Length: 277
Ligand code: TA6
Image (cartoon, rainbow, N blue to C red):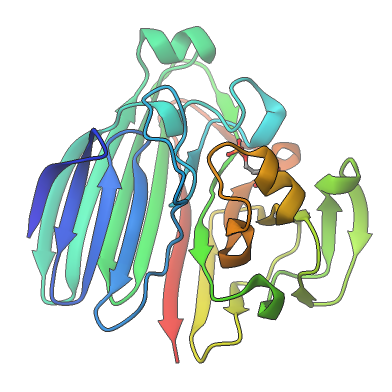
């Protein structure tokens, strides 16, 4: 069943199905929880998240668009703080499909002077697939970057190892320095990296029997982020030690390789999350 209810003062599309449970706020088109049947929560939501229409929610899957990070103002674009509308929902044996839409308005054109239509499709079942379809409805070409900035819930960041993100990365903690690492990473401090040649599937292991497999499409990079302790302490919407139970693995279109759309053209940015044991 799909219902629209109130959650922390916001409208949330609540999905209850034999295969999974999920919640998506219309604010930001932001998935805030996803739990396949018989599994633990896959998505991390900050216990100190603020549900303020002017702010982005800490945790879940923020939709960063039409730019990534500080390429513009506000940081990570305006999609994650805009009100999306519910376009459709349908269900079958495998799960539920929910689609939301966001189009340009006076408010968005004041920040970014282009006409667009975004459709965000959530395929919710034993796995979760999120597709952001961006269409140029303007008379001129425009370009964009962005991310599906997924926060994953993990047991313990000190036990996490990630594979499949590739070897080349830009290290945002060192001003975007070009670096090369192995194709397996662990965490013992702040990590903020743009992996520029990711493999098709990235796998996260956290010391528990559960593994997360993240297959992205339409992306040009994979960002991996954990703020570690000092940054968590400095952020009002994160508990001081909450960095221990989250890691972001993001399907990203990075600024240096932004997508250009001619009038009428569309592009899909996808992340598909599969849990295995
Ligand atoms: O994706 C990594 C990142 O861009 C980091 O640099 C970090 O700032 C994070 O996203 C969160 O950004 P936010 O604007 O949500 O505080």
